[in-house]
Image (tube, rainbow, N blue to C red; front, side, top):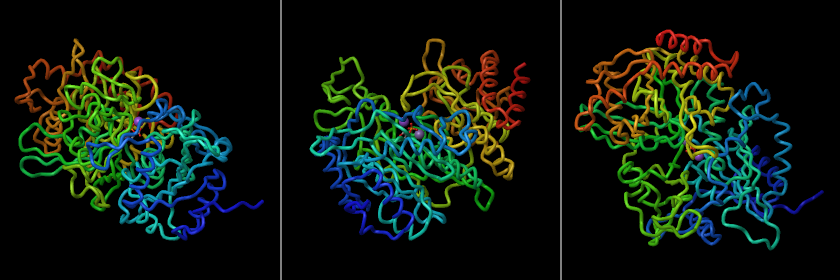
Length: 604
Ligand code: PEP
Ligand code: MN
Ligand code: NA
């Protein structure tokens, strides 16, 4: 059978033969009306954003330059963890924490879904690079998508277009990342502002280093360079090649004497990574600069230290709760424009608003579902997982070395979750393996960042539960092995933090936000050997006078409650951790059982 060539498929701006063959294969399967090679230019951005405005997907914001509001289909607002699969050849390699299907079976199911799925639409070819294009081994990908919203968002979030395509040359490896909304248009059929399908699949093929996504236009499901590539696929590459791909912010902390420490921190989605990455210290003389707010790739440098790099180019932050009080630097970043907002509210003068942006809500808004909203309305104006998507280069406190391909040497790693009880404000691990135990047992209350119930405590190891691209037991072992292979004196120190502990009345015990600089200060003073700590069964906790609480107005009892290690609470954790560890069978490194035994005996 012969078919009429799809416009745009010929005259491609590359001779990369594997890329050309793959684009042709997917175009033949999905039958778009045309293929467009994305160049990443300003002209292309202007053309696509105008097209999105005309389609009703975008509203141009009168109050912010070159910025747009998108209101999604109300069903397509978050990552769909129950539709996310790791399709390894062997089921054991997906492990107990991921959904799995046989790769051949998944391909057959999805090939059926992909057949003709771009009818009436354009297939965009987005060449991209995670991390700097001038890295020694640039990490290329190519996303195929039928969503203009995805093209525009990818331009904010990653290095895309001609520069990436040229650097790929004729034969450099890339991760194929296939995406479709799954909403073909029949001739004459009117489009909707946010096309998507009720059937969704977010699939990683780890051995092939390939991604197939179907049915959703939302961030983490559709911007495939982010969670799918830089965490799920990259974690598999990292396992095989001896590095780490982690759900971590990266910040630079300078003390009053000018000494610099780089810190990486892993918290689950919507637990304050962006806020900590851009923190304004409340203690005099301390300075924070930002390098990344979501993902860190870490490799050992020639000096034996662990170096971290942010592979992204933009911020895809949770909007609600982001305001001039809580994160002024994020506000300054978006003020400059060039941003896409999704599922927030529109003000009458053409700006965006969401809960927590200002103390006083505007008297009238258009809510995220397009309805009139006033402060008396029953529902919030913005979806709890609404987002701002903005270039990281607009961040006023971006560290100049943020895009250095060799990364920055990490002094400390923080793990943290959202826990009302049990977990102290800050605890230092005794050593690397104890830190791995902290990461492996990390727990947090669920948030709106994924579909499903909110506020339920679940184990979220290393804040990577939805993002580990292989068996989580093997992943814990990879962390243990990473420690073994290193010079212990050069490894980052590991800490566990909890900004969310409550008192008996349900109030937060710690003010959080800029005041978290006090915890960062204690962390670096521990590294420098100047801060004291008490050894408890769960690790080293600040002595009451070693944590700088000057001017905070907390009573000594409140400080003590924030730092308290209550054996009765911890004894309740033991059976939960045991049950959690049992899930991993033989895959769990024995050191994790050893650490649990140490905890049990210290609590006894
Ligand atoms: C996302 O869901 O698109 C995303 C960026 O992830 P997270 O939930 O970690 O914020
Ligand atoms: Mn995240
Ligand atoms: Na999310």
